[in-house]
Length: 239
Image (tube, rainbow, N blue to C red):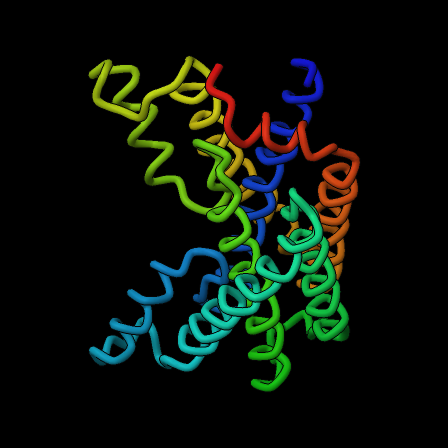
């Protein structure tokens, strides 16, 4: 596999990190104090609500998001088992399923009122569909052994990056790309995605989700062009 094609694949994974940041920015700022990709945040919101804080008036959004995220992981696991029987590299296919779910969420969000007076049913349906898509993404990326590119979490890439810069030898093995380039791409992608999602807030959830669905679909389509050998190289190479 040429360096150019490998960089293209890693660039696509970095773009997935951007979509994660954008999804959670929209979820928090538009859907109302809930995350759909960051399950840790929802777990804490649920604890805050059950603890009686007035800042989180209801535990329902976090509960819906967590339940849908878990369901996405379960469905994704089943899909991966099915795909593994026929295709050596199945990640693009799970991303295609994610893009479909985001598009369905965008359709459900059509007519979202600009003043935020949305019905509970519409709100929870959108939250559930987006969290379902993120759960599916999460299990797909975790099962694909692409070192240093989680696309959903920044803790491990951030620790790897800081350890590489300040305490050499204390982080994961691998070349400069594994220990530096990929963590930087993940952290920067998440930040830029959060910024992009914030800028998309005035659009409303439906147009923004259509855009994000399109981006994920393009990444999935580009991944379909990889041969099995290319896929294994990207997954396991330490350069």
